[in-house]
Every structure is written in C-alpha cells, then in structure tokens.
Length: 301
Image 1 (cartoon, rainbow, N blue to C red):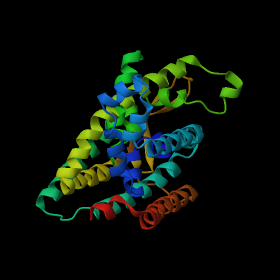
Image 2 (cartoon, rainbow, N blue to C red):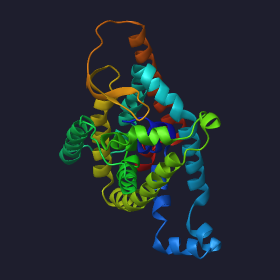
Image 3 (tube, rainbow, N blue to C red):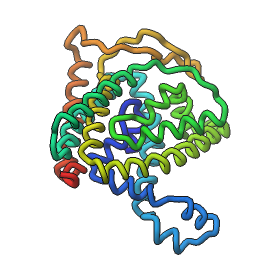
Image 4 (tube, rainbow, N blue to C red):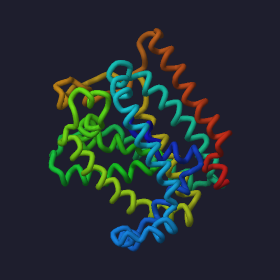
C-alpha cells in the first residue's frame, strides 16, 4: 500500500482491497473515536489496547512507512528516467484489480452499471485535471493531507494524485528522508511539512472511514460498482505513453512535467517491450495475490 501511494494515480485502497484487508482496515480506523482519544490523553492503556486492533494497525503503519521511505527516492528517480515503465506496471496492476473487484458485485444490473459508468466518467475527468499552484502555508499542508487521505482509502483514487492536483506532490515526496540525509542531515522544514500533512491525513481518515464502512454495510453492491468505475477512470492517468505539453520547475530547480497527454507509441522499440512486460507482470501479480491471499471479492461474494 505504501509503495502504491507514492505513485500518483495508484490507490493504496485498491491494494488493500486486493489483499483482502479493506473491510478490516475500515473497521480498525473506525474504532478510533473521541472517547479513545480522551483515553490516550489519560494514558488509559488498558482501554486503548482493548478497543483498538493495534497489532493490525501497527503492521499496516510500519509496512507503509518502510515502503515509502525505501521506495520514494527510487520511484521518484524511475519516474524521471523511465516513466513509461512505472506507469505500465501500475496500469497492469490496476486493470487486473478492476476484474477482481468487479467479482465482488453480487448483481450487475442497470443501477450498478449506471453507478460504475458515472464514477468512471468522473474519475476520467478528475485525473485529467491540471495541477494548480497553491500556498505553502502550514494550514494548507494540513488541508492537503486531509483531502488526500480521503482519496488514499478509496480504491481507484490516489492520494498522491490529489496532492499532485493541489500542487503539493513534489514538495511532500521531496520531504521524505532518504539516503541523502546522511550527507545533509535532518532538514526541519521537511519534517514540519510531513508533520502537517500527517495531521491532515489523520483527520481525513477518521472522517471518511466511518462513511465508507456504513456504505459497505448498507449498500455493498452499489459501493463496489462505484469503486470499479473509479479505478476504470483512473487508468487514464496510468497510461504509460505520454507527451509532455508543459513543464514546470520543482523546488530543486529541476524541470518536471506539468501537463501531459496520452499518446500511442510511434515505434515498437525496446521501451515499448519493457512497458508491455511490466504491465503483464503487474496484472499477473494482482491475480496471484487474489488467488493466494483472498481478496475482498471473495469476502463479499
């Protein structure tokens, strides 16, 4: 999930659904309420460990942090040097995910098909939006984290892509410490950015988890059909072959793509072969995980 959230366009919620832990994740987040927060301030450890599935949440948190810290620099470099390969891998991964998630819908009827169609169109338009310039104030990093976290937990909508649209993706990704910390030391401006975004993420997760949990309990087929549409529409962002229409300069003075459009490759060369192979690898990986680990489709079928 952490690796997925680093890449704009890939949702950690999608991976949670594939791995069969999505419902458990929603319920775990939902267990954190105002009373529990009061217990934390009172250091009532007995109640905290009784109410919260802390082992599950700790495993998810540690896994995400390890993936983000270890892969952020690598994926940032790959997106700069071989973007089509990264996009192709996740394109195959999400495309296969749609098949596994769609299997969780008990009945495809005009209503579920209509919901999937509407959310497909909505997601297609959203991921085609142009990133904007926004303030670097502390409150906006909190706001960005809250909005991104709502997308983070929704299969098909990427939290990192929302950060990209809000003009904060490069700043947040660049704030994640990597190997360069040994040379430059801790940069407190970066730490503050991560803290503010983290506060926003916590606020957003606690808000959206309750709504999604209620939605799955009462309107399971409709919810999953809508999520299938979100994932299908997000494939627009993950198409591996792109042409840059406009560039921008990041905070390190490096030119990065600002506006891109999807294209078909002009020639069938080695890069295209790499992309095709990685797309197949991503799709096969999802199908294998689905078969071995048991996806949410199996739980809701």
